[in-house]
Length: 554
Image (cartoon, rainbow, N blue to C red; front, side):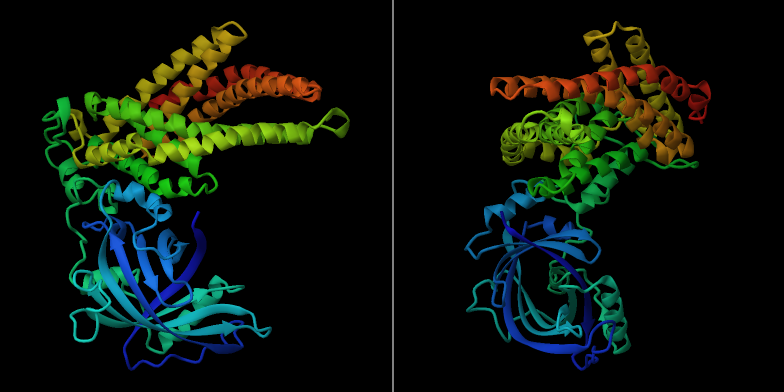
């Protein structure tokens, strides 16, 4: 795995004759130490249509300086990026290219621009001599990659762009307040906040290569597409034509009515957001960052649910095959996520028991069980993300957004269509909940309650998607439905936990350790399930009041 550095910085630009102020005395800074001058030579890589640049991602091969090598920068928040580093090689290293696969797809990474930078570094230190921040003053010269990749051909006299840039980056114990204070001092001296988010963005613009505003490439879901601009937005706001059997059914779909957005506007906005989340979380899942698997799985479920709920807006013949693939991806993500949740639940259960009831090496037994499942699940998930089926799904999602299969109802006012979809899903939830309440205790009721839980989740997602159209009533409806879903989720988690506890107890007994403690936890889980079953009628009664549904109707 590549090394990772969290980069928190502010960027500025200055004229050649602008002098930087003395920064000693600002905040906790008592000294400014000269750290020398470096000559840096970097070649930036992207697809020909600049999918990485459109997403604020940079991939470069840099020589010179203290950190020569390959650098991949992924945005985290404004002014914050994670920089992942790999050793120098002739071609982009696989450990970094895997992290941009959801953007690049099967496009080729090529050199797009070259930057040569003379960097003068000063270190801001506190009274104890501890570094707080680095101020880098850069003299930058940029060329288009064509004819400039060969070190022997790039140099003085070649066409390109030049500018002066100042970067202030936190190190050690520096904080955001220091960045603010330094920024004010620089501004007072005539330095300006940078007009571009990165050197690459400015280089592309000033060498005439920027693709901003251009139509997205036919094979790659870049940021412009995900946010609904470019060709996808034109199609969504045009005649509503889509691929497959839905083509031509959406005459007028996507055009804004006098009273607000159309159903097509609202549903496509929700769908775009879920696709954006899936694409953005891909590298986080690969890096095994906290909660990334869960959030990506939720996005796949929300998108699939929208396809099923809003069939009057989106042609089911076109979305059903995508839904099948989203279900597959959610299941693959669930292998890892479900293990995480289950292990934490069992660990907390053990921690709550007094020592006198924790018989045998139960913590070690749980750890061994969890790691055995984790090793296989993690490897399998990475294989999925590197595989052809996942790549095909990403391409399909792009094609869906570029040519949304809108039906005629997509052109109708959003409130009436959205309310109908939410209420349709509610009726399905009501049938399943009543059936579960009438089911016999045991496996039959467990399965019925699990079915009701899935219906509650679908109803909640439909209401969330409808919020731009229905406002506060949809928000409240989703919140009440979520309470039902959470209660049913607790019950299902108990069912799954009891299965794992039986497995753990069996393994412990075979090893001669005894299964008493796991049996005790089994009993507690069983009691919790009974408690949730008893609570369901009251929770459902509150959520299913007629006035809540009436509030949704426009």
